Length: 400
Image (cartoon, rainbow, N blue to C red; front, side, top):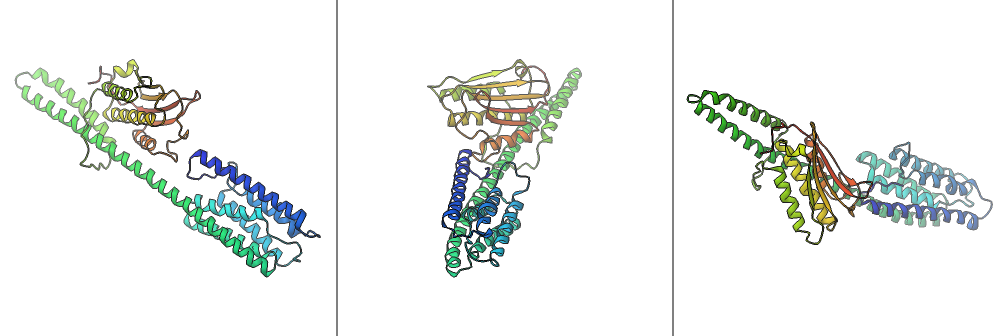
């Protein structure tokens, strides 16, 4: 049973197991009541809630292989329950009772509808149908005592179920807002980084243009190399500008300047190792293609961001494990991989998931550059963060 609730996977498994056990016990209670309490003759209205409407309502609950969408299943369960309740009003009363499995299955459907159905109108109509189905069950006995006592109990259950469903729905709404805020903040941070890097390149272009104008009269042969450098810098700047959309800059950040990527990564890894004096020293590995290539500014900034966030997560969740940071490159891509020797104690799919938001921001940044991002446990049990970024670079010797 997959409830798709906004909890960690372990909590969702506990909730699913508790729901299955409770429904099984309720069905057993229905069968015992039918066999031991119901007076003969046993009419169809007595065994239909036990063997038909109750199990059908339980089968409508969330699961991984349902062919019908959840709202349709929920409305169908409510319609079947209402139909049986209406039939019970026109048959002899002997032995007629409401089913516990059916009632609590409808209650669980109400909770799940509030938690899962996104459309407000569909959610309201589905919950109303299920609530009416539960309340109509109290009319099956066709006695005043049964109606009063049953309505009292059902009203309490409905109130608790609706309150629980609303809490889950509000929690999911807050989580989605937090995800949107993280993605928006990451886009703004990327825009700021690009702005600073482009400003650096434009300054270089201006300096080169002024130098070419200065030497034009005295050394004309030096003008053409200067113009080539200006054209190359302009091309790189336009490539970065293509990714810069609706820049919104704040005033409380440090300006970013391009530097030696491997040197900065070495500083990150060294500082990370110093913060874990009792753990194995972290390793930084870089292929020859990375060492002899010049990456575009936005790719460098993103690689630094990925490594910083990944190392922060290792400090938080696996502080004593061995860590390796590796950079690889080919003609079209650059790949950064951060691996620690044991899986973290978090969920095994947090990126875009329902736990922390740091990896969500990384995914947003990488995908903004047309790259791919993955974080999770490998087949060998290691935790691995991998970012693969397109490589608009020129192999012109070592980076700056």
